[in-house]
Length: 233
Image 1 (cartoon, helix red, strand yellow):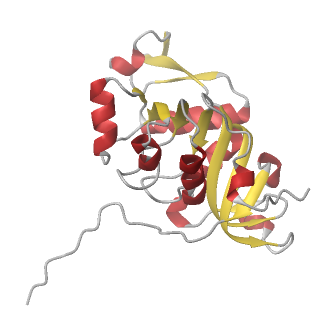
Image 2 (cartoon, rainbow, N blue to C red; image 1 turned 90 degrees about the vertical axis):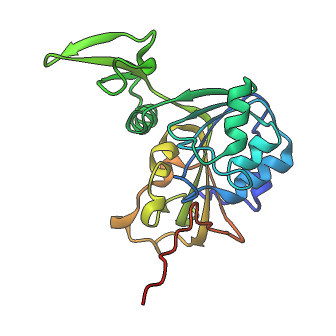
């Protein structure tokens, strides 16, 4: 039951070239900073990364892009990363852009064991190319396959030795969904506590979905776009 590993290096052990990873977070909020940095240092390449976005040029998944460690991105938004744009337009990086709701639903379906589902999102666009279409209530829907990964890597506010997790605020975005959909789920947490210290009513991800957990360090918690209001008299 004790799922604690002693370091981030031990947490990512077994991640190999060519694997598919899910990485939680939205923008720069709730991203597994320590794990991403460790993946950069590991030198693993040919990764397929499923994430809402690709970070920024010098932070988050942008660090893996800089080192050419990502082969394919499956995302819903990629507008804050110049290196991502350069690699995509040059053909160096494969990209599968998915409507954000469909991306979340496909991760959720993967965790729930649902192989596919129909959705109206994307019908009539490039998203629908090559996909089955059916009519429900007079409206066309496209068939979307569930998403799973060799490893899911998530970031939580608090967790215990059994792997139970609580996410804080907006960081409760893709993290709980992806935690369910990885064959092996790694959780890095800001605070690691003893079993029983977390209120069961507020646990977002039960420990049954988590195989490895560790307490992270030195979180930057960057602001993706800092906007300030001009002072007026």
